[in-house]
Amino acid sequence: MPSVASGKVIDKVVFVKNKIKIIFKDANDLLISKETYIQFFLYPNKVLSNHEYCELIAYENINESRKYAFKIASNRLYSKKQMKDKLLKRGLFIHEADQIIKELQESNLLSDQEYMEETIRDGKIKRYGLKRIQQRLKQVGIKEDQAVRENYTQDEEIENLNAAFEQAKIIYQNKNFVKQKESIFRFLKSRGFETEMINQIIENLKYDHQKEIEILKKEARSLFQTLKVRYNNEELMAILKKKTLARGYRYEDVKEVLEELYGEIY
Image (cartoon, rainbow, N blue to C red):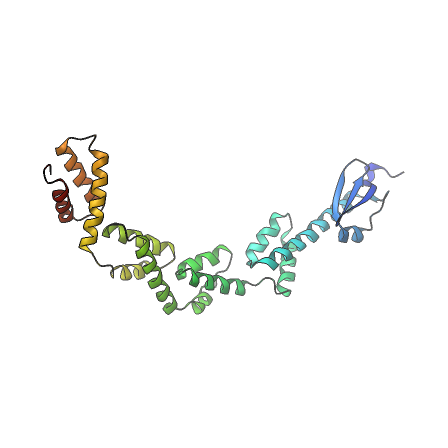
């Protein structure tokens, strides 16, 4: 009779759908693939030494990790670093993960070059600047800056900058001139364009006095309603002037609007 002290003794082998459950006499069980079952030639009353048991576990993990890697790589693009991180999180050793990555590359399911090209294409569609694309690639372990520049020319970046600038103008059209410039700058910066390029294109923004007055009137009325319950007329006008100036409006515009709206108490 095999001794439990000499390892683990198989009690039963049960087929469960696409898996096989190995039930040991110590009441523990293990769910494995058919490949692992065949590889280790398992059967009732077979004794697995502790070393053999650990080998079985490792083989099953590598086998299942390989299936997992091929499945996810078939559904979308990954960089080598992304895939390696995923495999290491599954408990594989570095050399085991590297071997699976090699198999993926040989099957044309993993390519940093293809990942880079797809990221650049996506960046162009989303109107991203070069820095945003480079940062994204560096996050996934791709640092081929020269290759990126060859696939994303300066002319293309300028074209995308102009398109993103027009988009930002629409998004922030209801802000006053100063806030609009600040918001557009942050918008373009977040999309990876260089500060110098942004400053140059923002110079194309034109100050529209009539539009500025309309926006200022709306803000002044809103502030007036909020503040009137807390201050008398003299204090109210001083606070109103201070707050509107703090929001970036020009002094002459603030004076013009407050006199027009609240001339009697201004």
